[in-house]
Length: 115
Length: 111
Image (tube, rainbow over all chains, first blue to last red; front, side):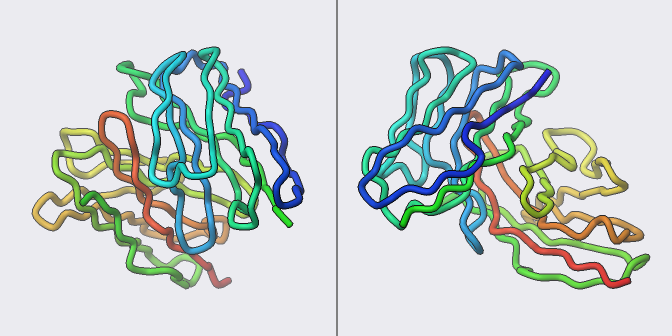
């Protein structure tokens, strides 16, 4: 049982390049989240999904797109990377009503550097 | 507006001393409240959570937190800090779908 995994762990991009971050969970969770973490700012929600085929905007969605084609996967895309998107990205998942309702489980993070 | 405030950016305590990390929130309904810990270069690990019931909740690693509705607070406490507790601590408030995190408190433990 791997929990929440993220690919890649680290990536360097040049301004204007695109990339996709992959989040996978094996807990059959309905809800999935993408956050970015910047020094002194805590975690800020980028996008989230409440089920397969659904996505919604969070606090800082601009410059990012997401897709949830399969229940276990949540992809975060950067179409044209900017230096302001240099950050650590965390994926999280949580179950819908159940014993651990409300608790988010986090992946290990992806460190992204945009030059 | 919904928000979470952790007023202390850094806290330094001696090993064996007691610890209290502050968290205040603004939320329209009864929130779900969480404390997470993050060690350097790691993801976030849940310490404890409050959904309802007893306002004093126990978590892992000897931590506890008390929900005080009248003060909109959910402070984290530990009676005796260990060197391994040095990390960053995040308070979070959640509703049906979304969560809001505080900016974190970095704990340093002196030997």
